Length: 184
Image (cartoon, rainbow, N blue to C red; front, side, top):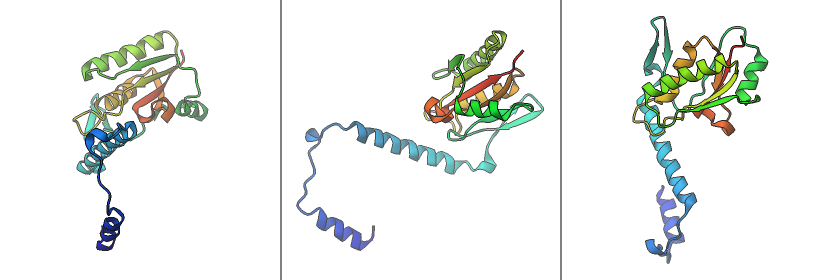
C-alpha cells in the first residue's frame, strides 16, 4: 500500500475497535475462503517449483513416455478412428454412465489394480461409458497428483479404451475422467 492509501485507511478506521474472538459469529464462508486461499498458495508454490520443461516423465512400458500432469490440467486421449461426435459427448458427459470407480483414499498400487479390473470387467460386460474419479491431488505431498497421473497412464495402456477426457465441472472437472470403451 502507498503512504496515501495507508493514511486513507487509517482515517476510515478511526474509532473502530475489533471484535473479541468470543463475540465473532462463525462464518462458513470465511472458513471456505481461508481454505481456498491456502489451496491457492499451495498450488502456486507447486507451479513455481516445477516449470513445464522440468516435468518428470513417467515410463509406460519401454516404448512410450508420458509427461506428468498437474492437478489443474485436463486429460484428453483418443485412438485413431474415434468420431468427433463421440469425443464431444464424452467431454460434455452427454451419455448414460454405465459404471463409476472412485479412487479416493486408495494407495497407488491398489488403485492401479482397481482401474485394471474395472476396465476389464466393464469391457467384458460390453459397457462403453465409464467414469473414474481420481481426485485433483490437493492433499498430496508430491508435486504431481499421483492417482490422476496413474489413471492417465493405465488408461492409455489399455487396448479396451478408445478415448477418455476430463469430465465437465458438474461431474468432477479435472478430478474425474470420462471413458469410452471399444465396442466388440
